[in-house]
Length: 340
Figure 1 (tube, helix red, strand yellow):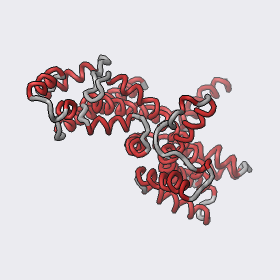
Figure 2 (cartoon, one colour):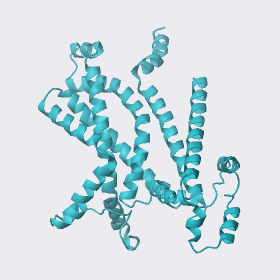
Figure 3 (cartoon, rainbow, N blue to C red):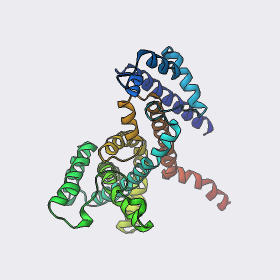
Figure 4 (tube, rainbow, N blue to C red):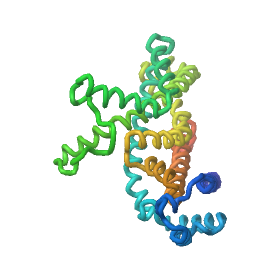
Protein backbone atom coordinates (compact mmCIF):
# COMPACT_ATOMS: atom_id res chain seq x y z
CA UNK A 1 0.00 0.00 0.00
CA UNK A 2 2.79 2.42 0.91
CA UNK A 3 4.69 1.59 -2.28
CA UNK A 4 1.59 2.23 -4.39
CA UNK A 5 1.04 5.58 -2.66
CA UNK A 6 4.65 6.59 -3.26
CA UNK A 7 4.32 5.66 -6.94
CA UNK A 8 1.16 7.75 -7.26
CA UNK A 9 2.86 10.72 -5.57
CA UNK A 10 5.83 10.41 -7.92
CA UNK A 11 3.53 10.31 -10.95
CA UNK A 12 1.65 13.34 -9.57
CA UNK A 13 4.88 15.31 -9.15
CA UNK A 14 6.01 14.46 -12.69
CA UNK A 15 2.58 15.45 -14.05
CA UNK A 16 2.72 18.87 -12.39
CA UNK A 17 6.28 19.36 -13.64
CA UNK A 18 5.29 18.56 -17.22
CA UNK A 19 2.31 20.93 -17.04
CA UNK A 20 4.34 23.89 -15.76
CA UNK A 21 7.12 23.17 -18.27
CA UNK A 22 4.69 23.18 -21.19
CA UNK A 23 3.06 26.35 -19.85
CA UNK A 24 6.40 28.11 -19.50
CA UNK A 25 7.27 27.30 -23.09
CA UNK A 26 3.83 28.36 -24.35
CA UNK A 27 3.70 31.73 -22.60
CA UNK A 28 7.17 32.69 -23.79
CA UNK A 29 6.33 31.71 -27.37
CA UNK A 30 3.26 33.95 -27.41
CA UNK A 31 3.69 37.23 -29.28
CA UNK A 32 3.83 40.35 -27.15
CA UNK A 33 6.28 41.89 -24.71
CA UNK A 34 5.10 42.15 -21.08
CA UNK A 35 7.47 45.05 -20.45
CA UNK A 36 6.11 47.03 -23.40
CA UNK A 37 2.56 46.30 -22.31
CA UNK A 38 3.32 47.45 -18.78
CA UNK A 39 5.33 50.59 -19.63
CA UNK A 40 3.26 51.66 -22.62
CA UNK A 41 4.27 52.57 -26.16
CA UNK A 42 5.93 55.85 -25.15
CA UNK A 43 8.64 54.24 -23.00
CA UNK A 44 12.18 54.76 -24.26
CA UNK A 45 14.31 51.76 -25.31
CA UNK A 46 16.68 52.41 -22.40
CA UNK A 47 13.84 52.23 -19.84
CA UNK A 48 12.47 49.07 -21.51
CA UNK A 49 15.89 47.42 -21.43
CA UNK A 50 16.46 48.38 -17.78
CA UNK A 51 13.03 47.07 -16.75
CA UNK A 52 13.54 43.84 -18.66
CA UNK A 53 16.89 43.36 -16.93
CA UNK A 54 15.38 44.11 -13.51
CA UNK A 55 12.68 41.47 -14.12
CA UNK A 56 15.23 38.94 -15.34
CA UNK A 57 13.56 38.64 -18.75
CA UNK A 58 16.80 39.22 -20.66
CA UNK A 59 18.31 35.94 -19.45
CA UNK A 60 18.22 32.70 -21.49
CA UNK A 61 14.90 30.87 -21.20
CA UNK A 62 16.36 27.70 -19.60
CA UNK A 63 17.94 29.86 -16.90
CA UNK A 64 14.67 31.72 -16.33
CA UNK A 65 12.79 28.42 -16.06
CA UNK A 66 15.16 26.84 -13.57
CA UNK A 67 15.22 29.98 -11.46
CA UNK A 68 11.41 30.19 -11.47
CA UNK A 69 11.09 26.50 -10.54
CA UNK A 70 13.56 26.88 -7.67
CA UNK A 71 11.76 29.95 -6.33
CA UNK A 72 8.32 28.39 -6.73
CA UNK A 73 9.28 25.26 -4.79
CA UNK A 74 10.58 27.48 -1.99
CA UNK A 75 7.33 29.46 -1.94
CA UNK A 76 8.77 32.63 -3.49
CA UNK A 77 6.37 33.15 -6.39
CA UNK A 78 7.67 36.53 -7.45
CA UNK A 79 5.80 39.72 -8.23
CA UNK A 80 3.08 40.36 -10.79
CA UNK A 81 4.39 42.43 -13.69
CA UNK A 82 1.02 44.00 -14.47
CA UNK A 83 -0.27 44.54 -10.91
CA UNK A 84 3.03 45.18 -9.13
CA UNK A 85 1.87 42.98 -6.24
CA UNK A 86 3.24 39.71 -4.89
CA UNK A 87 1.89 36.80 -6.92
CA UNK A 88 1.01 34.93 -3.73
CA UNK A 89 -1.25 37.81 -2.70
CA UNK A 90 -2.88 37.97 -6.15
CA UNK A 91 -3.67 34.27 -6.04
CA UNK A 92 -4.65 34.39 -2.39
CA UNK A 93 -7.35 36.94 -3.17
CA UNK A 94 -8.66 34.85 -6.07
CA UNK A 95 -8.40 31.34 -4.61
CA UNK A 96 -11.36 31.65 -2.23
CA UNK A 97 -13.97 32.62 -4.87
CA UNK A 98 -12.76 29.83 -7.15
CA UNK A 99 -12.94 27.22 -4.40
CA UNK A 100 -16.48 28.37 -3.59
CA UNK A 101 -17.50 27.76 -7.20
CA UNK A 102 -15.64 24.46 -7.56
CA UNK A 103 -16.69 23.08 -4.17
CA UNK A 104 -20.32 24.11 -4.57
CA UNK A 105 -20.54 22.73 -8.10
CA UNK A 106 -18.98 19.40 -7.07
CA UNK A 107 -21.47 19.07 -4.21
CA UNK A 108 -24.44 19.84 -6.45
CA UNK A 109 -23.04 17.71 -9.26
CA UNK A 110 -22.82 14.56 -7.20
CA UNK A 111 -26.00 15.06 -5.19
CA UNK A 112 -28.05 15.93 -8.25
CA UNK A 113 -26.35 13.45 -10.55
CA UNK A 114 -26.76 10.52 -8.16
CA UNK A 115 -30.42 11.33 -7.49
CA UNK A 116 -31.29 11.76 -11.18
CA UNK A 117 -29.28 8.72 -12.24
CA UNK A 118 -30.78 6.54 -9.51
CA UNK A 119 -34.28 7.69 -10.47
CA UNK A 120 -33.61 6.81 -14.10
CA UNK A 121 -32.17 3.41 -13.21
CA UNK A 122 -35.18 2.58 -11.01
CA UNK A 123 -37.52 3.53 -13.88
CA UNK A 124 -35.42 2.46 -16.84
CA UNK A 125 -37.16 2.22 -20.22
CA UNK A 126 -39.99 4.43 -19.00
CA UNK A 127 -41.04 7.76 -20.53
CA UNK A 128 -39.45 9.64 -17.65
CA UNK A 129 -36.19 7.80 -18.21
CA UNK A 130 -36.25 8.56 -21.93
CA UNK A 131 -37.03 12.25 -21.32
CA UNK A 132 -34.27 12.65 -18.72
CA UNK A 133 -31.82 10.82 -20.98
CA UNK A 134 -32.52 13.30 -23.77
CA UNK A 135 -32.26 16.33 -21.48
CA UNK A 136 -29.01 15.21 -19.85
CA UNK A 137 -27.49 14.36 -23.24
CA UNK A 138 -28.25 17.84 -24.59
CA UNK A 139 -27.05 19.69 -21.48
CA UNK A 140 -23.88 17.60 -21.23
CA UNK A 141 -23.06 18.34 -24.86
CA UNK A 142 -23.32 22.11 -24.38
CA UNK A 143 -20.12 24.03 -23.58
CA UNK A 144 -20.23 25.75 -20.22
CA UNK A 145 -19.98 29.22 -21.77
CA UNK A 146 -23.10 28.54 -23.88
CA UNK A 147 -25.01 27.53 -20.75
CA UNK A 148 -23.71 30.64 -18.97
CA UNK A 149 -24.78 33.00 -21.74
CA UNK A 150 -28.20 31.34 -21.91
CA UNK A 151 -28.75 31.76 -18.18
CA UNK A 152 -27.66 35.40 -18.34
CA UNK A 153 -30.03 36.05 -21.25
CA UNK A 154 -32.98 34.52 -19.40
CA UNK A 155 -32.50 35.34 -15.72
CA UNK A 156 -30.68 38.68 -15.97
CA UNK A 157 -31.74 40.55 -19.11
CA UNK A 158 -34.87 38.58 -19.92
CA UNK A 159 -36.19 38.68 -16.35
CA UNK A 160 -35.90 42.48 -16.33
CA UNK A 161 -37.44 42.82 -19.79
CA UNK A 162 -40.35 40.55 -18.95
CA UNK A 163 -40.89 42.15 -15.52
CA UNK A 164 -40.39 38.93 -13.58
CA UNK A 165 -40.56 39.04 -9.76
CA UNK A 166 -37.42 40.42 -8.16
CA UNK A 167 -36.53 37.01 -6.71
CA UNK A 168 -36.09 35.67 -10.27
CA UNK A 169 -34.01 38.61 -11.49
CA UNK A 170 -30.51 37.40 -10.81
CA UNK A 171 -27.33 39.50 -11.07
CA UNK A 172 -24.97 38.42 -13.80
CA UNK A 173 -21.70 40.13 -12.88
CA UNK A 174 -19.39 40.23 -9.90
CA UNK A 175 -19.26 38.60 -6.50
CA UNK A 176 -21.40 41.26 -4.79
CA UNK A 177 -23.42 44.34 -5.65
CA UNK A 178 -22.31 47.93 -5.33
CA UNK A 179 -22.36 49.05 -1.72
CA UNK A 180 -22.84 45.49 -0.46
CA UNK A 181 -20.24 46.05 2.27
CA UNK A 182 -22.52 48.68 3.79
CA UNK A 183 -25.43 46.27 4.18
CA UNK A 184 -26.26 44.40 7.40
CA UNK A 185 -24.65 40.93 7.66
CA UNK A 186 -27.81 39.03 6.67
CA UNK A 187 -28.49 41.27 3.67
CA UNK A 188 -24.83 41.11 2.64
CA UNK A 189 -24.93 37.31 2.71
CA UNK A 190 -28.15 37.25 0.69
CA UNK A 191 -26.60 39.56 -1.90
CA UNK A 192 -23.54 37.33 -2.28
CA UNK A 193 -25.69 34.23 -2.60
CA UNK A 194 -27.75 35.89 -5.34
CA UNK A 195 -24.55 36.68 -7.25
CA UNK A 196 -23.42 33.08 -6.80
CA UNK A 197 -26.57 31.48 -8.27
CA UNK A 198 -25.89 31.87 -12.01
CA UNK A 199 -22.17 30.88 -12.13
CA UNK A 200 -22.78 27.98 -9.76
CA UNK A 201 -25.82 26.82 -11.71
CA UNK A 202 -23.82 26.92 -14.95
CA UNK A 203 -21.15 24.57 -13.64
CA UNK A 204 -23.59 22.35 -11.75
CA UNK A 205 -25.98 21.80 -14.69
CA UNK A 206 -23.26 20.44 -16.95
CA UNK A 207 -21.83 18.32 -14.11
CA UNK A 208 -25.20 16.91 -13.07
CA UNK A 209 -26.00 15.93 -16.65
CA UNK A 210 -22.75 14.02 -17.09
CA UNK A 211 -22.85 12.39 -13.66
CA UNK A 212 -26.50 11.33 -14.05
CA UNK A 213 -25.74 9.54 -17.32
CA UNK A 214 -22.80 7.76 -15.71
CA UNK A 215 -24.76 6.84 -12.57
CA UNK A 216 -27.66 5.48 -14.60
CA UNK A 217 -25.38 3.20 -16.61
CA UNK A 218 -23.50 1.99 -13.53
CA UNK A 219 -26.70 1.30 -11.58
CA UNK A 220 -28.41 -0.49 -14.46
CA UNK A 221 -25.36 -2.73 -14.70
CA UNK A 222 -25.37 -3.28 -10.92
CA UNK A 223 -29.09 -4.18 -10.92
CA UNK A 224 -28.32 -7.06 -13.29
CA UNK A 225 -25.80 -8.64 -10.93
CA UNK A 226 -26.53 -11.89 -9.05
CA UNK A 227 -26.20 -10.28 -5.60
CA UNK A 228 -29.11 -7.94 -6.43
CA UNK A 229 -31.30 -10.86 -7.46
CA UNK A 230 -30.31 -12.63 -4.25
CA UNK A 231 -31.25 -9.55 -2.20
CA UNK A 232 -34.64 -9.43 -3.88
CA UNK A 233 -35.12 -13.14 -3.27
CA UNK A 234 -34.56 -12.52 0.46
CA UNK A 235 -37.58 -10.21 0.40
CA UNK A 236 -35.76 -6.88 0.76
CA UNK A 237 -37.72 -3.79 -0.27
CA UNK A 238 -37.09 -2.16 -3.62
CA UNK A 239 -35.62 0.99 -2.10
CA UNK A 240 -33.25 -1.02 0.08
CA UNK A 241 -32.09 -3.07 -2.91
CA UNK A 242 -31.68 0.07 -5.00
CA UNK A 243 -29.80 2.23 -2.48
CA UNK A 244 -28.26 -0.36 -0.17
CA UNK A 245 -26.93 -2.73 -2.82
CA UNK A 246 -27.02 -1.37 -6.37
CA UNK A 247 -26.06 2.21 -5.54
CA UNK A 248 -23.25 1.13 -3.20
CA UNK A 249 -21.64 -0.91 -5.97
CA UNK A 250 -22.28 1.78 -8.58
CA UNK A 251 -20.52 4.41 -6.45
CA UNK A 252 -17.07 2.92 -7.11
CA UNK A 253 -16.88 3.96 -10.79
CA UNK A 254 -18.84 7.14 -10.01
CA UNK A 255 -16.25 8.27 -7.45
CA UNK A 256 -13.52 7.45 -9.96
CA UNK A 257 -15.31 9.80 -12.34
CA UNK A 258 -14.23 12.68 -10.06
CA UNK A 259 -10.68 12.38 -11.35
CA UNK A 260 -11.92 12.75 -14.93
CA UNK A 261 -14.25 15.64 -14.16
CA UNK A 262 -11.75 17.90 -12.40
CA UNK A 263 -9.78 19.01 -15.49
CA UNK A 264 -13.02 19.82 -17.33
CA UNK A 265 -14.37 21.57 -14.23
CA UNK A 266 -11.36 23.84 -13.87
CA UNK A 267 -11.38 24.68 -17.57
CA UNK A 268 -15.09 25.47 -17.27
CA UNK A 269 -14.37 27.68 -14.27
CA UNK A 270 -12.14 29.87 -16.45
CA UNK A 271 -14.97 30.59 -18.92
CA UNK A 272 -17.58 31.01 -16.21
CA UNK A 273 -15.50 33.43 -14.17
CA UNK A 274 -14.77 35.58 -17.22
CA UNK A 275 -18.42 35.67 -18.32
CA UNK A 276 -19.76 36.49 -14.85
CA UNK A 277 -16.81 38.74 -13.86
CA UNK A 278 -16.28 36.43 -10.90
CA UNK A 279 -13.06 37.42 -9.07
CA UNK A 280 -11.47 33.97 -9.12
CA UNK A 281 -8.30 32.37 -10.41
CA UNK A 282 -9.72 31.67 -13.86
CA UNK A 283 -10.40 35.37 -14.46
CA UNK A 284 -7.00 36.24 -13.03
CA UNK A 285 -5.40 33.74 -15.43
CA UNK A 286 -7.12 35.25 -18.49
CA UNK A 287 -6.13 38.78 -17.46
CA UNK A 288 -2.54 37.63 -16.88
CA UNK A 289 -2.38 35.97 -20.31
CA UNK A 290 -3.64 39.13 -22.01
CA UNK A 291 -1.05 41.21 -20.10
CA UNK A 292 1.71 38.61 -20.67
CA UNK A 293 2.12 38.54 -16.90
CA UNK A 294 4.39 35.50 -16.83
CA UNK A 295 4.72 35.04 -13.04
CA UNK A 296 0.94 35.02 -12.51
CA UNK A 297 0.27 32.69 -15.46
CA UNK A 298 2.85 30.21 -14.21
CA UNK A 299 1.61 30.32 -10.62
CA UNK A 300 -2.05 29.89 -11.61
CA UNK A 301 -1.18 26.95 -13.85
CA UNK A 302 0.86 25.28 -11.12
CA UNK A 303 -1.90 25.73 -8.53
CA UNK A 304 -4.56 24.39 -10.90
CA UNK A 305 -2.36 21.41 -11.76
CA UNK A 306 -1.77 20.66 -8.07
CA UNK A 307 -5.50 20.86 -7.34
CA UNK A 308 -6.33 18.48 -10.20
CA UNK A 309 -3.65 16.00 -9.15
CA UNK A 310 -4.76 16.18 -5.51
CA UNK A 311 -8.36 15.61 -6.63
CA UNK A 312 -7.31 12.51 -8.56
CA UNK A 313 -5.52 11.11 -5.52
CA UNK A 314 -8.58 11.84 -3.37
CA UNK A 315 -10.84 10.13 -5.94
CA UNK A 316 -8.68 6.99 -5.80
CA UNK A 317 -8.85 6.98 -2.02
CA UNK A 318 -12.63 7.47 -1.96
CA UNK A 319 -13.09 4.74 -4.58
CA UNK A 320 -11.10 2.32 -2.44
CA UNK A 321 -13.18 3.21 0.63
CA UNK A 322 -16.46 2.86 -1.29
CA UNK A 323 -15.54 -0.52 -2.79
CA UNK A 324 -17.70 -3.19 -1.07
CA UNK A 325 -15.05 -5.84 -1.76
CA UNK A 326 -12.54 -3.83 0.25
CA UNK A 327 -15.01 -3.48 3.13
CA UNK A 328 -15.74 -7.20 3.02
CA UNK A 329 -12.05 -8.04 3.04
CA UNK A 330 -11.50 -5.76 6.02
CA UNK A 331 -14.42 -7.33 7.90
CA UNK A 332 -13.39 -10.91 7.18
CA UNK A 333 -10.55 -11.08 9.77
CA UNK A 334 -12.87 -9.66 12.43
CA UNK A 335 -15.49 -12.27 11.59
CA UNK A 336 -12.93 -15.05 11.87
CA UNK A 337 -11.70 -13.72 15.21
CA UNK A 338 -15.24 -13.49 16.51
CA UNK A 339 -16.02 -17.01 15.33
CA UNK A 340 -12.97 -18.39 17.09
